[in-house]
Image (cartoon, rainbow, N blue to C red; front, side, top):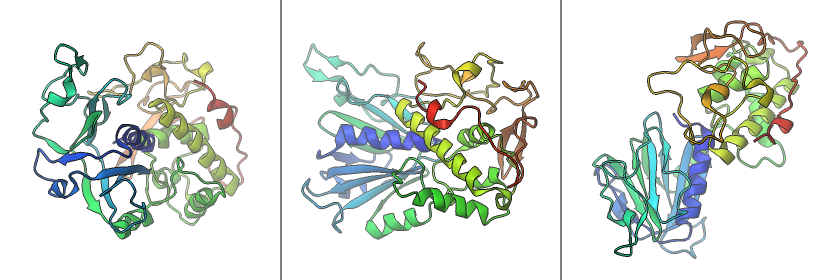
Length: 348
């Protein structure tokens, strides 16, 4: 399932590719009946909140975003959802965001402009029959397949979704309200911090990779109850997540290791599909076997202490941790980090 930084990248891609433009909407699969009602509307903007994407559509570009005529296409990709893009050069930075890494169309297609006929090749791409929603504008198109949620909401419906979510570390938080909400919610519960980080009502946008890696960077035992954790510790955990997700939103990749640790025990235990990230084929990016401290490194030596990394099911998801490094278990434990998030965030 895509984590929060991916959805923020999606929102930015829609803003760049379709913002202020009149779009054509269709549902080749036929399971999104509202597509016809949205046909010809203008995309006013795109918003990411945790793992939820909202596309704001209105009859014209001069409509106030708060107007009752604005419709919000609410999308949650879930485990299998994906957006694929095709268009003019520069239309989309990545051809696919989400679970499947296929391009638009039945097969892998070239997205180059067909200069012989002077027509962009993407305009002739036939959608796969599994496409739930196609959005097309003057410069490109985007196809949605396999989402957990694809629905049209009015303003109260959008707000109802937001009211169910915890604070998103990637959304502006100038007065610290989001951080306080997170800290207060965690400290009120006896639920393990490793469970709470995956609860979208506690903090929005955190998935299994960020959960495992942030807890390791905090040297924090994933099984410690929230009530046993100090406010300063949780505030620092929040700030580290802000830095980690900001890096992910900027680069499209989850990289949590410090540069000096990346060549230490540079291994990962791949699943059948592997832990795929954007840009895996680019020689200049940090390879995935160097990107994580504990995620998918069960039974391998910890990069820092050499102890065997462990994994165990926790609330139906595997949690990964180092039993030697992650010993913080109480509000009285001293908590330090050798590599502050602020400095790490500047590392490419």
